[in-house]
Length: 155
Image 1 (cartoon, rainbow, N blue to C red):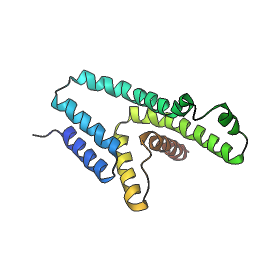
Image 2 (cartoon, rainbow, N blue to C red):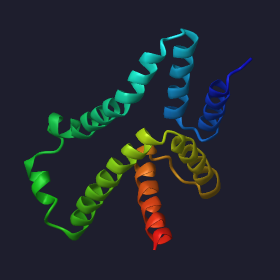
Image 3 (tube, rainbow, N blue to C red):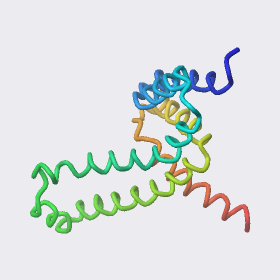
Image 4 (spheres, one colour):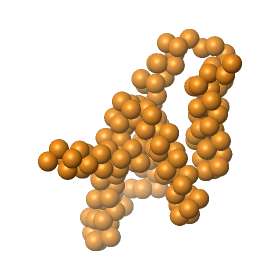
């Protein structure tokens, strides 16, 4: 008999396919492979505990590549404070990085949120012609909204 975790992975793969979300499809594919190889659950828990941190490192490396290649230099960095548009971009970058930090905690502590984020992303892509931006920023926004809701429900 197929386990409920396998059924959920299949559903996530299908949703990822519908949304054309390659990251979800690859993640599910890898997890299926680990399950088929009967990898010890300790390894899966290790991946769960450390994986998001590894992902943040990879994303940070990717963001810093233009500096390492010289595509972005000191002059470019100094220009970031010279126009209002640059200040908006700078503040937006700070804002999304901060809320993504809280999204990271939300995903780590409540993994079921991931499924809701995937479904929400699919709805946005299909209905509103949106673009998948990744679970960290989505979880960060969810965290902020949940905090606002809890504030108003406790008063």
